Length: 159
Image (cartoon, rainbow, N blue to C red; front, side):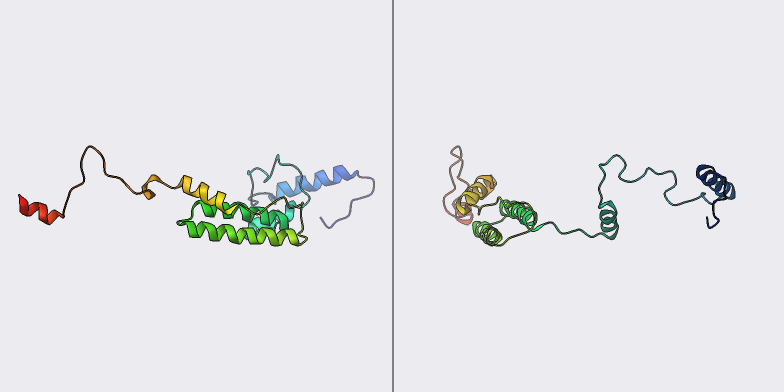
């Protein structure tokens, strides 16, 4: 490819000749990705495609703008509160995210406008309690079979 295009030969003809000669020499054989579809084919054009591709290849992620990061963190906090083991843990998670939301509204974060308001702690706790499994509620003895009186050892001695 270091040779110059000869005068009087069209550019297209010169390129076609170089490709044909390279193919005949086998320079296109066994190239990596041969026979595979082009990545991201059919997706809309993105000017930052090469940066995103490099980050994916390196296993890295790019930071979100401040307001979007706060929204994502708020969603994750609600999911963590729903999976919490105790009411105190729910209250602590909601208090932490509320503090970050208040701080985020005070500062000028980058990104789209922030539309978050602090969560109502009591409402989140109420939803958490409603989603808890039935096993957390105290079990009551069934009316068909009365609860045994005394310990197992006393009942055995009586018989």
